[in-house]
Amino acid sequence: MVPDLRPDGFPLVHIFGLVVLFFTLRDRPESKQATKVFFVPSDRANRDPVLSPDKTGIIVEFRSTMVEAVVLWNEPNNLSHWNFHLDPGWERFSDMARLASKAIRNVNPELTIVLGGVSACDNDFLRLMANRGVIDCVDAVGVHGFPLDWNHWRIEEWPDRINEAAEVTGKPVWVLEVGASSFGAEEVQAFGLERTVELLSGKTDRIHWYSLFDLPAAWPAETRHKEAEGSSYYRHYYLGLIRDDGKLKLAARHFPRDGSLGFCQWFHFEDHRLDAAVRRMKEFGVRYVRTGLSWADSFRPNAVAWFDRMMAALEPFDVSLTLCFTPAHLGIEPHHTSPPKANREFADFAEWAISRYAPRAMAAVATEFTQERAI
Image: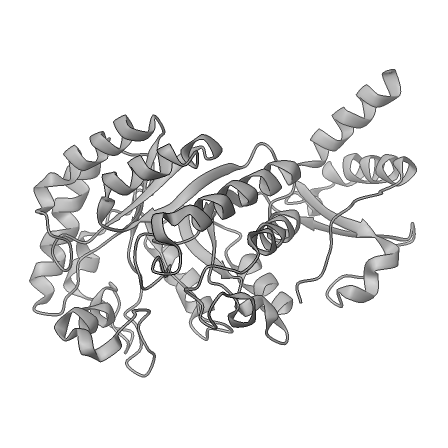
């Protein structure tokens, strides 16, 4: 079970001590990256072996500012990621997203919340989300598009679809996944990357190319029907700019090195490619990255240690952190695409994840403490 690390019931004297500690360490050269803090009362220490109490009896761990946004789910309009047969009209999903948004705001009201990337930039789905009150609970909407591989629209339609999404929602539109496979020819992927950059530059604040690495041949792609989907399934294995053997593809030459384009790169549990991915993304000049924390993986042994390692490795980048995938034992059916039986469970996971990896800056805590003392 995900440990309950919320700082409820935290004594004011401990808050004061942490504020003093923060401002003392902030000006030390070796503490340059100590811009955020995660803490829990010491009586909860045994719930998390990664942390250890300091002399004040409080568990303190400094973290860099790196999570720029949290993304609620991934492709909720795609049966491979959300079983809408179990949730007609997406009523359960809408309620879950609203609850998660509220839980995240309670932890860090300044953090940007993005509606999980909508498959095929489906603006009718965004209209439904607006009618369900979900759009009111987020700061931006995420869209995906793969017109050269799967979507039933042409690549030249990208600007119109972005404009429509903005009009429908009244929110900034982030492209959380866009890509082209080299399934047929590497030249097709190179064209797709160049044309995508031409069409989307200046239309959105975030463009995440999917992806850095090809999917290893021994791993299953995240789809509902696997090989029965024919060539549509196998295209998943050719979306990276780097082949499984580590060699760069033709499209890699055309990736802009000015930081204007980011990557969406998913990491499997204890993924051996993590360190190589960080090194490669630095070589590409990337400054922002989208990845995910799997709610289902949070119940694995050593889950917190793996999450910590992944997030620490990604510290050089601005991260859009996606929260998704239902633990089998918590779903209406035992599958990671199932709606959870209790939506509050996902909200609790979101609250834990943001408390740990994107808490409010200590400056905000200091301000609140000063205001309370003044009263």
